[in-house]
Image (tube, rainbow, N blue to C red):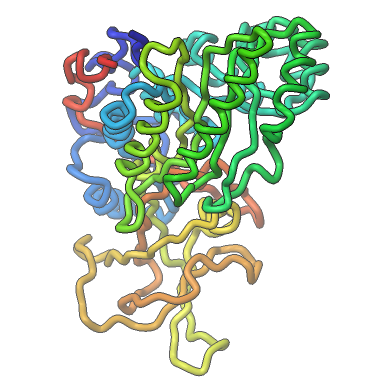
Length: 444
């Protein structure tokens, strides 16, 4: 039976990710708060939680914004995936968060990778990951990137039109292809079928062209949209994919890979839980691609694996009474914004919650006198609003706010617009997180 993780793939105490995990890292915090003196990521384990590490870090005189990256949480999410979707091999979507510690952790746990460019492929290969563990899941590839993928033997890739087939034939004829079909992604936060995916009705024509060119089509892929909110979307997509498999068999093409894409939630809510999606998806896979059918099942989760691993701490750099509303309100200005880590508000349609810390004794603010407030980023653009309306205690310049679940589509797309620095990172991990027995991570 196909196993998602190799039996030897687990992180040991001696691994680079778990290095220094037996004691508190005492390296001096630099102004970036996220790098050691030799500019390499490091791990602190003296804190029991990200919030405790934030409280420790803000005693340092530096005021820079910073992430706390809880590596254990990445491990836990990978285990959760395997527990609920044991037949489906995850290929982590690097674009979601290319943090080196995240990639290294996933690589050593045996997770595979979804890359969209030459640089992403190169970064993953640099971790010692085999090319066979990478899918170049970009339906429209730059010729130079396609040539690079050929040269490094990353051959599994996607296509959705005839022109892409001819491009692949020219630059990497040994590629192994997945036909990306469009599916209903109307319930997703970010739609993708408006840009990628062939109509299922055109599948036979595209497969015929591929066959004429002598290209090797291995299967079908789809994506129900980033942040899918409707489990039935996965069910209908699997059904559509099975129909393409049937058509392919009718003219002698036997495919053996189904890629169910991404769209899995980063956090459970009362309306939507990962377990619910997994149950519906498992049911569809068992119906249309049952055990023993010879089809390998893969997926491209991004936010599911990393969203909860990052907590962002920002410093209050200014405040003033609002001059835009009739009701009294305080505007707080902080040192990260929508051009930095909070680009997720614009690009990912995220919703964030500001929580307050007081500088004094480092304890969470807990007072009943909450005031109407808004939170703004540091740039000179009026668009740079993080939270337009919220309730916060009265804060002073130098106080801190923090935001949880900031690991997905945040730091990956941050810019230095207006010359504003990007947050540094502190990493935390426990030794025990990497000492689980091999069977718990390797059983299919």
